[in-house]
Image (cartoon, rainbow, N blue to C red):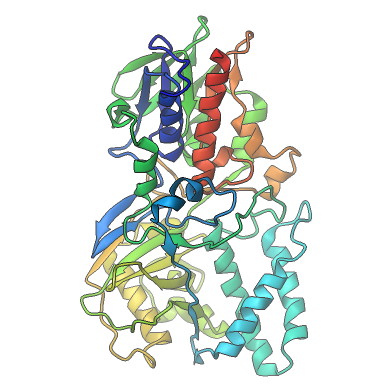
Length: 471
């Protein structure tokens, strides 16, 4: 234990065994703090890292890619282990009537999408209105023919789905154009080569007895600060834990649901406002296994553009499952992608306001909806379509231990002035400066929210806060 300063008498309770909680425990252990307990509400470690064996490799039901290389803690931790491989794809664009859209149009469309983002840091605007205005203005400058302009206009819905998938937001109009978020330079889609994102947990726990410190199925119901400058943590099963320090790491979704009943005394109003105004929705990832592969080796995935009339009639043409007016849930698919080291597997992404209802659909209707979409869009190029025989998914929004996927800045959170992720990260400190209740997790990261590297950094940050107190 290099630079050990802790001791067995300092009791530290970490709530949540996700990336932030594991990171905090590993840092504390390496500085000599041996009396660390991790209370995990679920029956496994990892949190929103959830790698499971499916098909011929591990797949990630939660966090999947290492996004970027420069100033990315995850990349720095594993770059010499040769674990990460390129998982970038260039999906083909298919239209509900025109079928495959030519490559020249698709390439130009991607360039216009990128141009639409220029200048998107104006305060007080939502992403949906901003990008809609920008994209419509760019259409007239980019395409001259009527048919191309109509097709480009129909691609606005694809841009919306791109945003709602990437940010896991139910409506792109909730999302602020202004954000402190930083993008790490380098490859944005580095995959784990069939090993799963769980690999980073193994790296964090190497040479630290963290698994022995994790108590599963411990749902925390109360964190009460005590007059002795400590805290008492109470669980649903009746277990009680005294602590000198508590590090809270569960999702913002759980915090939104429980902040009023969980903390005694209640949190400062400033922190409550940050919890209320920061966003936390979901995106649906669905892995689909086929008994026989109907695509070829150079398949890069598919994205879908709906003709305006087809979009409006989709609920009548495919009647199973949820609808918004006459629009079916099947139109909320952003795209499908191949999966590393898993030749018979595809990954479908669904987004938007119907995600909670999509999560409740049985596998049969998911398969029916996907087959309807594929037959409508790609059957001409892939005539040997087969029906999937297995479906795997994790319903993050429905799961009471998560209540969604990852955080985002809303127009409302930006109105409060200071970045609310920074406010959320502020510890509750005694009058002698002792940090008793600390907050970690991706939603508390000022620059790398929604990312595993952000979650890990915040775990280290709060562990360092405790370490500094004892120096």
